Length: 498
Image (cartoon, rainbow, N blue to C red; front, top):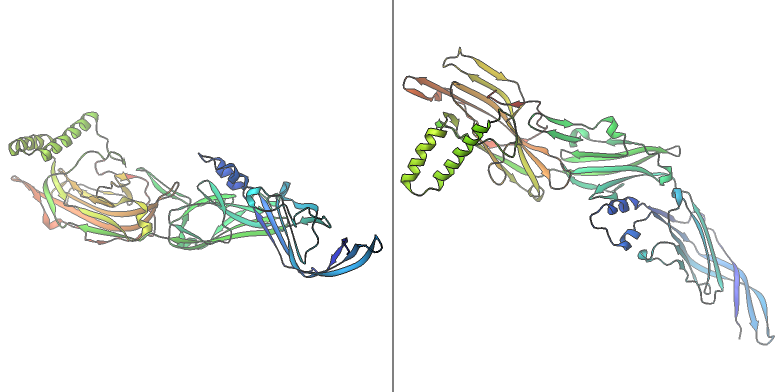
């Protein structure tokens, strides 16, 4: 009967052994989580740390050493030379990132008799990671001693993170699918963080196709697309919106440790599918104009109603509702006479053009729509013959309100221009834009469709009164909107009453 213990070393060629280093940067996620209204569980927060994992495969080894053997016959121990094979294995290190991104450390422990497969693992990560501090497990006979020391020096690499819902996610090299108008908020940096120069440069390729913008600023006074500047592209964090369908590779470049570092990510930009169906009447009506109240809830230009006129307009709207609700014909007739005497404005009015957006896919159905209408040109004549006074309004003015009132459910609007004396002829050219915004905080409006249309109406008057001059009428055509290549932009609001 013999027993004993072993000491010695393993020898073998490890040059060129396969190895892998993965660095996890999670502090950005922790910062975002701390701002949430309801804090995540403590165990989840514990997992949001910066750490690294290093794995190196160890080829087959031959161990050599001394073994103490107790001889029952001699009743004493003696040392004998001993050697043997160790099969392929690996060394795994999973540790928290040190100060300044340092990746070094050491660990020593004793364990059971050396196994035939060499596998060593060490970790200082929280229990939630389910990694054992030492493998093989310490204890037992403690006849094998392990000592592991490491000092890893990672070359600087670029990374790109995308902010979503307050969290930052590493998207370097991972294709991203987004929708036009979706907020793209990126942060570029160099890892390890100790080598980050805190400055870099963004590039967005295929700009002419996907047309990224910084934002779209709009009210009734002005509509303007703000483009990305060189200053925007030189910041660590950048926010922009793709406005056209296509693919674009976004890159962040920096210089760290005397090296040029670059990170890239490809965006696949999708556009929602819509039809814009336009139905245009081919007639006008001379009589009471459907003027309605001022467009409450919309940002509109034009002359504001005085308090007295506003009250009178509200009275007329209330009177109209009473007429519609009244079932007694005699009372309804009396109310109609009161309305005609107080509220009727006589003129020539177009019987209307309607625009209806029809979503054709799930992306379209999941977003919002609005309309923007621009006036391309306006001509008015205030005398019955062509020698009368006329005025032309400059190109690209907003038609009254931003956005244009969405007055047909669920995705439609209608326009019915008209005029009263002393105007005898009124002609206008328009551009109606259908715009889309994906649902979600911070997303932006983008143009999808546009439709150009013209209307002209004229009156002829004599001693017997006025009527439509049909000979000079011009009507728009029904049809479908075409794809919009550019944003509607304006620097004034067109008000024919001014």
